[in-house]
View 1 (spheres, one colour):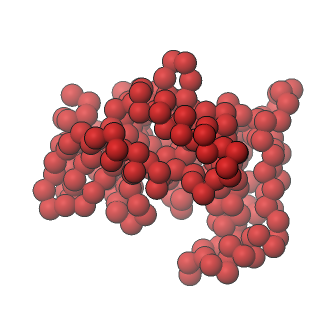
View 2 (cartoon, one colour):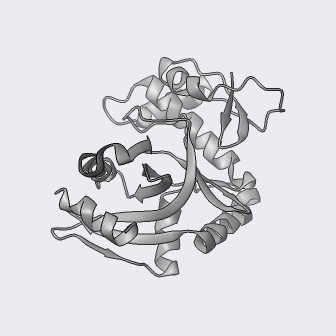
Length: 233
């Protein structure tokens, strides 16, 4: 099947229902040439399953493999993964990023509770950012971290917020060096030598056009209000 992901015509042939279901809203029926072709061999899938956490299905792992392939091949097109929960508020996208288990989904869930129809989740784990002349755009992907939230939508990027756990809620603006360190671990890395330069160019472009914050937060709804008042108001 052909999909249109972040403006790239992407061809893949999933065998399992997880990716087929998530891909349905992204199906492309136009006549543009394919930009990216993704394949996942049985051997590679078996290797991934051998290292997978207990309870992970082969369909989920196939989706992960397609995601990894897309995010690496998309780098030369000015597209980068930011491992995050992408929240849309008042027509702009806010990426809440952290290592797995820190509580990205928990935090954006607080925004849903606090602000209702004013906000929604675009992708709860694997959105991408498309960098262009007009700035940065957050795009949905058919790749999922387990929530099933993977909408085919795009919105201008307003800010990237790195989450840290803490008893009290506070917000600060990090230095560029800290931003780069955090971004590196939340994007596609371990890439080939041929695309390292483009990956660094993408980092530079993102730093020039986006706002970054570090949010130390607990799991009380007050954390959403602290973030909202510091980032949006």
